[in-house]
Image 1 (cartoon, rainbow, N blue to C red):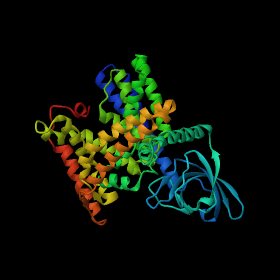
Image 2: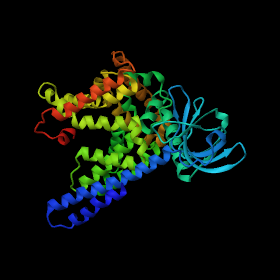
Image 3: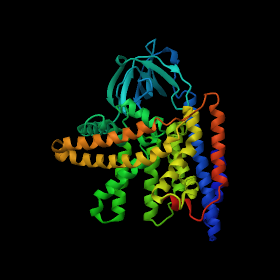
Image 4: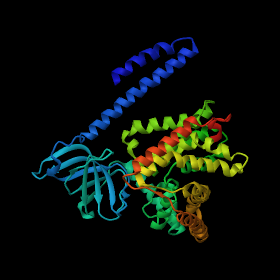
Length: 459
């Protein structure tokens, strides 16, 4: 594939040197094609290496102990077990042979335990081969006493864990369960969110509200810009905001939906400063390239698929679905309603395949939950600023305010969760998903286009 990239690359060099603007544009297109082929070749190589088991020079059945570094923060499975994604760097066999390894394993720890990305762990357990859509080729099930922590692989990861712990202590000041929801919305730690609230979000098709994405990153960026407004210099404010967004991404975790949002905000902001086009679909494509270049396995995750499909549906289907509402529904209501419907339509095939159910109440739920969550996030950011200054003095008042908002959010999800959804049998899910996908694609391609552009509508 790299050899195939040489042809468009050579042609691009020649065309970019031409005087004709049309030829230069063709050269840029060929250069982009060559770049894409090189990135694709690199991604395929990395995927093939992982599918072959990485570099584990010993028989996994003979492994008794292994040592590695956590790729991400621990997660809870639906059964309440802890999931660890481990980069295995050393394996010990029954014969006492220690071998250097370069493989990935999924470690399932029985019970609810918390680990941080970048921690070095030693695991007293064997490895079994594991077929998955991710990079993990091995799996192991252990008890907590079978895992020994050995510090962090670098001071940077230790700093990150300390910052997250500081956020946890500050947020705890508003009282549980409001603190659990705020922690989930700010740094993606959803383990302590009450089960009934999670069930309500799931039953209304609104789990994306809990997932860190454009809503959260946009509010963070706006909050930072507000604090930096005294600088009175657009470039300085943008650079400071971009650096803080990157820091926030590091602290919250490299989730595809959040990476997408941060890349789109950063590239879009740079384009506006340079007086260049910031068409949203182009920004969406750029963010996808960045994510897949960094981790080609991200394409197989639900977070990546739902995030990109949802925003693609908002940008492509939202204007189409909003056109019949013009003049009949107030614009303040019509635009978010059409956007919500577009996101639901675009993600429907994946939702049916993954969950076997679709909840139409999600279209209305977004109209109510997004404003509530936006206020919740703004107040949460204000609380983080005020907490070091006088958290104990205003803690009781803040707890009352956050509790009221929490009850409002829980009430909305609880009421809308009672609306019945469409449930399909597992064997019928592929056919329903295919039909939904075909209908969505037909709507996007065949529906008449209005005079107003999708980009303008999205803004």
